[in-house]
Length: 193
Image (cartoon, rainbow, N blue to C red; front, side, top):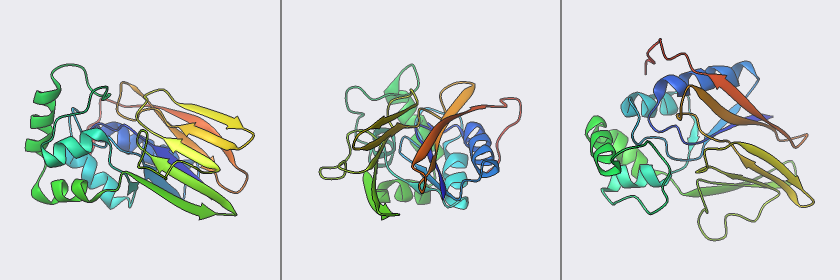
């Protein structure tokens, strides 16, 4: 099965729509988003609606937690340039109560087994005990990479919502093959939720 692995959407629904379309054309049957779904981008509500409507399996990143709970961002949080406190407030104000509740419900990490292999996904460092796996997928860093070692794969999808070129990782869980996919975002066309 092909799995699309996304991260760091930062409320950019246009980029998310383009990446979802690209991943489906590439044969992705399952999609995971590894946090920082909202935060500082132009369309957080449309982003949440797209994720939910497309049944994307989502994790929480530090921006999602901060937006949903009102807590400050931790030091080292990646995201849009400028005033983070203002971006948090604007994002929170743009979301409805149901979207905020949904963000609060998201786990920080997940593990699953498939085809005799273990997969661990988290936004950054992940919750204790999540990270030991044959395939480890981490968001947070906005630089995509695929690294193979004697113990398995380390995948970093990069960022969907960070500029005119989005990135994600496409993983074939049977062949244990992964590639970084890049998508030029059509900023002229607004996304619809």
